[in-house]
Image 1 (spheres, rainbow, N blue to C red):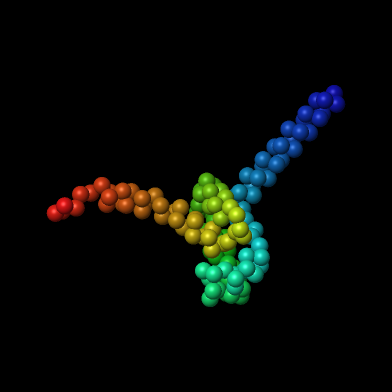
Image 2 (cartoon, rainbow, N blue to C red):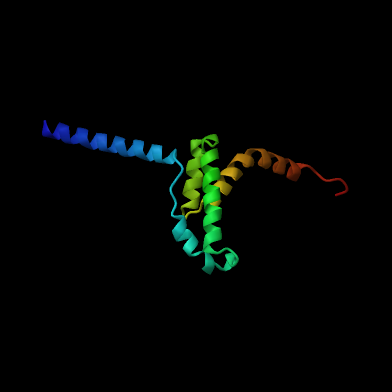
Length: 123
């Protein structure tokens, strides 16, 4: 009886964690923009982006991501969240860019392939 109860508890715990992970992927992630923006002044490529402007950009991007979140598929959201959380501090600006690119890619890629495949005159 105790073994059966123990197995049931383990199965329920795994199910609960799986559901929590699935729900988390469907919610806009929480990023620490203060940590990200504290490092903004020392980033060589962003010498004109100080901490207050960084936080403003990140807050604006978060608002945009929150308002558009439902229009993206779970797969697009999960892929972009994974991408922006690889190494370093994640950014809402990067997340918004990734999501926009994933929305535009299906229409841009076929056109780009057609232009590559289409022979040009005189060559």
